[in-house]
Length: 401
Image (cartoon, rainbow, N blue to C red; front, side, top):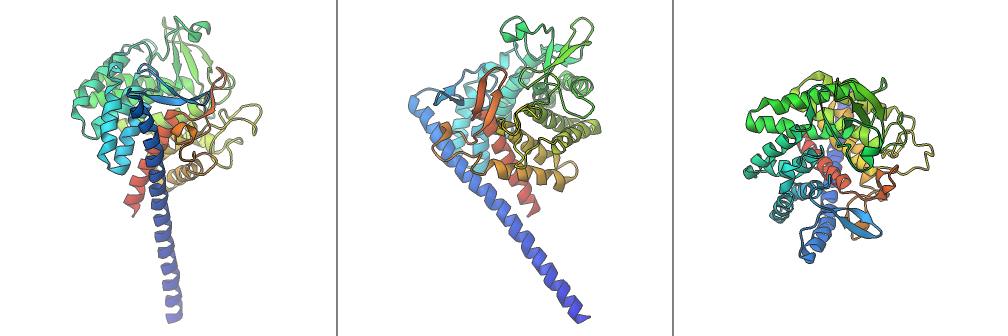
């Protein structure tokens, strides 16, 4: 009997040591990636500061960093990256940069001609407010008012793009809504909490409900674009603009949906949103074209797989969403998947070498192959969600320990 007890004690000791070692390794992973981000982002910000201008980097084109205007849909990601650098490091220098680059896009709060004001303001001012910048409260509320002007009560959705100019005017659409728009609902939820005005919340819930009803196939893959009738709210057609084909599954769109419905569950506690996020992710897990390194091809149905570009941005978005999803249900499962994705993104095939890649963190993202735009390049939103995922992982590992 004593011998059996001794053996059990030895086994338990090994298990405890093994768990401690594993936890230590996970924290070391976080620390090493923070150090990498500090070095790489310092090079990026130094180049901007040296110019004497306030610049907003989006990607690399023709070997040079491409900077954008405040009206660009990705303008909130670089200020948001600065906020995450401050949060990850505790170094107030990053907070100074975050305030500076956030203030530079203040005019976006009045933008009404596209839906991405949610991305732009929530990632920048939203993170700043969360970290104590109380003056940003009014910006959030005003931005939500601007976004709300795009809501069509008959269809119950917030219109994504205008169709009076540009390539969008050539598609025959009347009221296009893209799956990306799920990411803008967080701004509306926050505005209700800050102002007490429930209309923002109601718009967000209505949009989410219509997205469940009309954007998803039976297998929980999603369409990119659903075009609604402004007259009676009916669905006119279901298309894609950035995926391979109308009936294909565009990887980043799938990631937007997983993330967006996770946020909806957090804000409403309605289980149907949790279920939608979970089933949308199961489509990814069980897809025959989901790669062994967990960084998806740009479209799950692209015709030349495995010789198709990967999209690190889609992977980073999913990883961040899965860390939050793990706090609501089946924690080990979703955190485990997020850890696998992050380990891959942080490995040499996807994480840039210091001083290279235009000083962006991740390589191999895709903007829009059908438009011939930003193919196999770094993208500021890939970096933003990589850091957000790293922050969430760090918080979870510390709780576990």
